[in-house]
Length: 141
Image 1 (cartoon, rainbow, N blue to C red):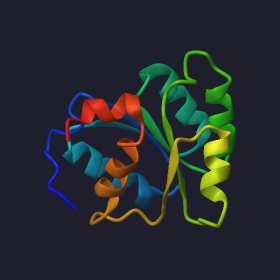
Image 2 (tube, one colour):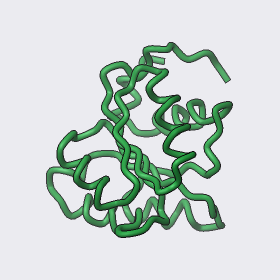
Image 3 (cartoon, helix red, strand yellow):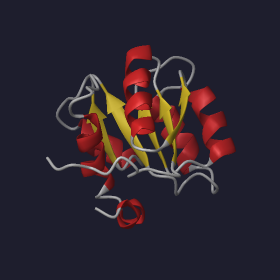
Image 4 (cartoon, helix red, strand yellow):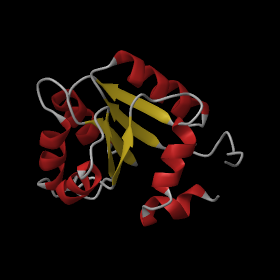
């Protein structure tokens, strides 16, 4: 664990999509604290509208949601030439053996497990972002 600069994500638009208010709140408060502008949605359809409008640096999406789940969202993103290159990180409360591989095979760059906690969220997220070349060079850490 290392100290991260409070402006680490300054100027970044980030979309967080989850039907659980607690997860959305934790993600939004922490991302905003590190300088990001966080756009939230409670289902994949709302999330897709935000992603199309904002073109965020990356997306964090729950896999299990009403209306359009994370699997459907990543499928729509992967099939849209404008959205397909936006990195996406899956979020799941039910991490099982093989979930990461399935998520990556579907187009997610990696995944985070719930519950999101104030203590570990940003560090866990940065560890994943470092593995996304187009974002790692912008982090300057």
